[in-house]
Amino acid sequence: MVEATADLSLETILSEVWWLLEQGVRDRRSPLHTGIFATIRDGFPEMRTVVLRSVDATARKLFCHTDIRSAKVEDLRHHANCAWLFYHPERKIQLRFLGTATVHHQTPLAEARWKDTQLMSRRCYATTLPPGTLVEAPTSGLPEYLTHRSPTLEESEIGAAHFAVIETTVHFLDWLLLDAKGHRRAKFFWHGETLSASWAIP
Image (cartoon, rainbow, N blue to C red):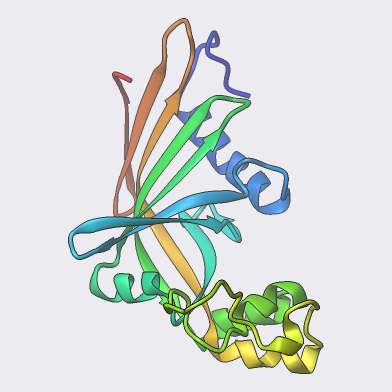
């Protein structure tokens, strides 16, 4: 674990970052299990909380799932650039990623992820109207028969056509460690496969 009083190295920091993210994927109690995912819409940032579904440290990729009808997918069609934000309150580490997103819909990757998605999670993609649709009263948007229970396997397939995977290839990481004795900050830039890393003033 990186400590504020330890002799920090950029290599150690980067290794721990990916380890923490992998822990976030596996452990629902991890503060990195969810992150803030930002897109660009009409020149302004649009942010929302998403579940970190998988990580590929070697390829520098972060993955989340979404409804293909959602506004963030439309955002990414216009601007593939995106950002992720995580904060670990116990370690007092903030992680900010910039990257380029690819949306997978009805592709082998998306189909494989759908097969691995639990029935309760598949229920999220069964809404009759697209996410963000304005309605007259509070509603989940789910069909009435799914309001209070998980779908059967057969029922869950209604959501398959709406399911998509967002893959982010990371190009930049800003790491910040908060410490009362003095914060520490590091920046990591990838130019293709070439990494440039440096310390920065917090």
